[in-house]
Image 1 (cartoon, rainbow, N blue to C red):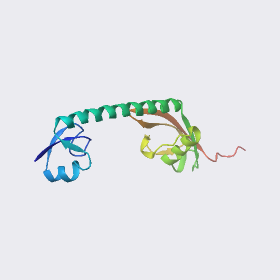
Image 2 (cartoon, one colour):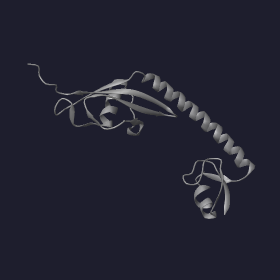
Image 3 (tube, one colour):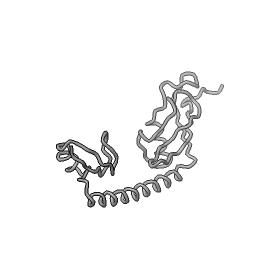
Image 4 (cartoon, rainbow, N blue to C red):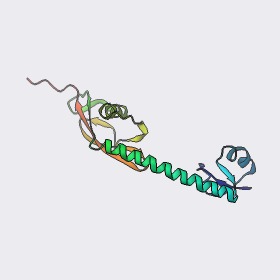
Length: 155
């Protein structure tokens, strides 16, 4: 077995900075060429310290961006119209794609499906709470109002 220090998080092996024992071939053919690990030396420990400082600075910048975006999205309330069977139940459901499109139209910011956290399927007219994960532990809660796309005509 060969001892190496991980320079990055490696799934099923460990976090950056951990000293692990791996098979020589795995170290030689996978970890070392891809820069995921380095031999355990003082130089590699110094290099890891510099990498960690750089990563911490990048995380801080990403968190500041996420907080600025959260401020832009403060008070967000989305309205989505959908066809209903009886004025309450929807024919289908309001999908995450519909909600993300409404957010993009309202605030001009595009999000990925994986960032949206819906409590359950939206199959009825009404108001629901949803969340957007902006990364680095920053989340924004907002309301989704579902309206009947074709309300009954008043007589």
